[in-house]
Length: 121
Length: 121
Image (cartoon, rainbow over all chains, first blue to last red; front, side, top):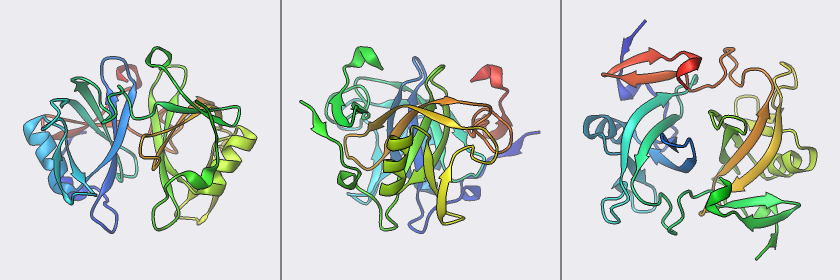
């Protein structure tokens, strides 16, 4: 069964946002988590360029627009509760603003924080 | 550099929660997104059993406690902003309450919602 997709049918929080997990479609690495509102979902689907809502800037955030580290949408997926999204992307350059491939570069091992090197992911 | 990990150093939202992405450590599939408070983070690390905070039940939720579909923690990772977590897990049975391996079983393709079969993930 297929249903025509309408971003308004997703469940947003009281700020009108939902969390979005970005995953590298090439190697399945989880790159980052950010937020979208309904319009950001619509723009991402319409343009194929992953577009978040920046909570700190209160503005649309076309990922990589200034850095060049764009995320090209491969596929958007909805979870069973319709209150979060998974975007599988083609990532150009690093996803993290620190220059690391993924934002999740800190692991907790034996009760301490350890920076993991990219070969471990 | 290693730093002793304290769950209180993470950044929680105004409900005291942060989003947690669960990823299958065996095949890198993104299984689900749920929420933890500081005590759930501490319990997950202490027990090795992934423990969320259920927003609907307002209670700790030891994943799989009733279904048997437990998540054994392989590694917890923190993102650069310290406001969300990635847990790499050994998943017993399906992660989704619908019986599917992942909660993200609906894809948007050509503007319509399509259920993806597990072989595609």
